[in-house]
Image 1 (tube, protein in one colour):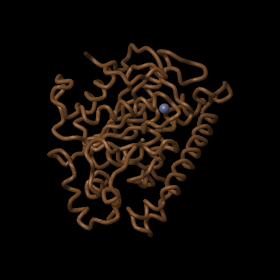
Image 2 (cartoon, protein in one colour):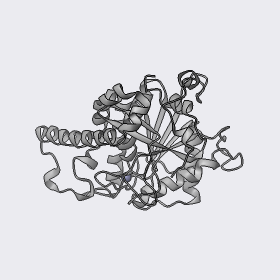
Image 3 (tube, rainbow, N blue to C red):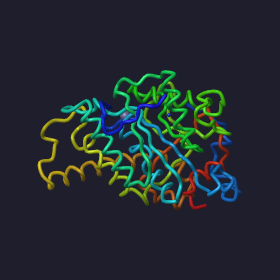
Length: 325
Ligand SMILES: [Zn+2]
């Protein structure tokens, strides 16, 4: 069965709160401690990669903005090093606006994330599921498994299952449900199974119950902050026009108003990514060393999922070759 991918003839929807907030895990302390392991850089080369040394990464978000908010920085950094990155939105965003909905909005959202992907140097795909209606079905589980296999993923990113939005929660559940099935030869035998399990990582979020996000990796995105902001302002229907809570006054009437609106969006996100760096400064110090970590202004954070392959400290440094040590 062919999965439903948003194409030109499209249909409908995906929501998005103006800032879709988006990871449960308990990995042994030794695995989390990236600050040690003197052979890390040498062993990093042994972290999974294909014969060209290219890592294959796939990131899932519920809506056409979730991956971009949580991981566009590290995605741009991976892409710049020649690694293969793909974002997938599990719904098409067709109800996430105060004024428009349905097929036209879904098409607009797809065009927006395609433009963002071009800026980031990555691939992106929007699944044609209605916004607000995603369910953790067997059909959707198979779709996620096929996507991970087709990407030949070494790394899979996803939201945690603690979240206010059902689409976010179920995207998390669907990816968790795929975390073993991707290596099972007789599950979805139409797509070759992976010979070994990828490493699954969660995006950072603010939710506390039943357990808060615990960062295992915090990456400085200072070198790509403008690239990430450029990508995010492409998502005008989400961030400029107010998403589901907007109004007519938020739609720019000319290029001057559009430029002003874009700068407001940029500043809002600068503050958000700066808060991430400040909140997880201790982890930055572990990874980068105190001197370099103090200078980091903007960051993205990730937690290792206890399903899938459990990475060593060296594995994580291989996946995130950005710490300069
Ligand atoms: Zn969302």
